[in-house]
Length: 326
Image (cartoon, rainbow, N blue to C red; front, side, top):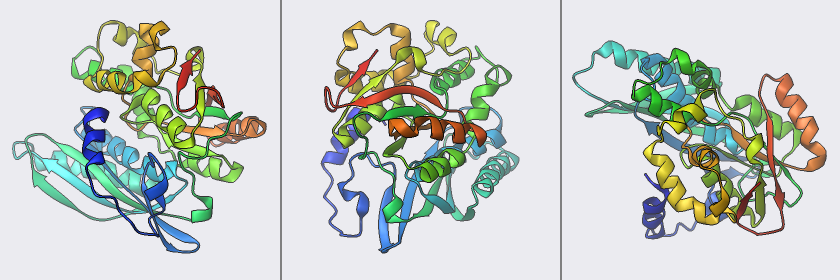
């Protein structure tokens, strides 16, 4: 759902008052966190979507990795998952088996277990997970802790929305976007465990609202300004070429409309940069806000763990709750 209409709906819902709902006071939290003891809290999230690749097993793996990402973004450890399935009667059962197998493989890789699920007849396939994890409330990582002087690291390249649009349009094959598919199938587990070990101030994962939307939410939750360096943004191969052909997903235009007012120099942005900033991501990386004196340490540990890390900007006291693109 586009961020504008979604925000209008959420504003009309009743407020929840429960002293154990830790995330009630955390703006733009990636998952819900509910305290069950002084040292343990549940972390819960849900996500599902229609296929973005043709291979059903890979689709299942990507959807599962995407759903697990919100738990990792908050420093949680996933423990259980429930399958969510919408499936057309016209497709063979072997397709559903392949989707569920892919999801199960990724959940197993995460060290969690599938405990059940729910299916409905639908006109098109939809798959995802409802995920529950655990976290020590004292070690919870949220969107609300970024501090001026922090460096911003991103752990996966951008452009999956544009590439998926090109795939659906028959302009690219899955083989031609294999690097992006591998990235979407990759869990954010190593990135999450590394940031917990090093100690960071804030984090969010980059998904449907694009880098621009999720970064702006982090800035607003933390009450800080953010500077992003356009030339430092990592992008999957062929993304710029596909964007230049006009293969921009609808979600990109929705993100542009809703979040662009939060950019101080929006009128001077190049079209290509704007396309990347607002591209809705599937199973994107973590955006980590870390103290400057820990930047090299966390980058080295991420790299040694097989996880990429790009320095893409910094946090500032200037223009609070806004973004500037250099």
